[in-house]
Image (cartoon, rainbow, N blue to C red; front, side, top):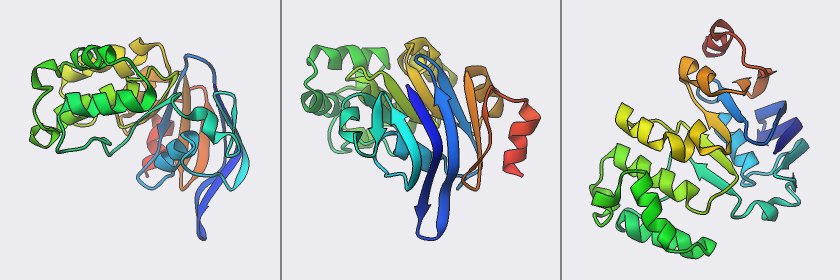
Length: 221
């Protein structure tokens, strides 16, 4: 599903990703650890086809990046720091708009709202919702088109335990999808990881089988 070999990405002279190599099989979860500025979000944007790698090879869902990035359209679900929702619109209106973009039956909108526990607030403007509620609607948006790959940047941020449990079958391991999860939660991340990647100043300190917690915590020193 994902194969990176020596992937590099720079912003001017600054190296955001420096020779990152990792592979993820169908149905696996890759958890990415690292301090702020380590390159985690840049990695997600490369995987989504939103940023062009400057060196190395990257294949996602069989598409060679960047030349075949167009093949990823409609096949990736992205949940980042920004919810990518129109704040003046309601959750139902946002998801209906998303459904039209992807040619998805509108019946899926109602199912998605129910799945994330937002059916009762579906007609309130997003601007009036709490952060946790907005995150739930954003999760519904990310999976509405049933993508095989989920790219999740701190997906549980702002959620209470009940909401985390509610979203488990939507964006968690229970979804059965291939996932890339960025998190600072070392213990929680290890529980989810089939493959782990540790980034420090853009370079991989480890990539493969999840290491011990102590090794991961070194990334933050």
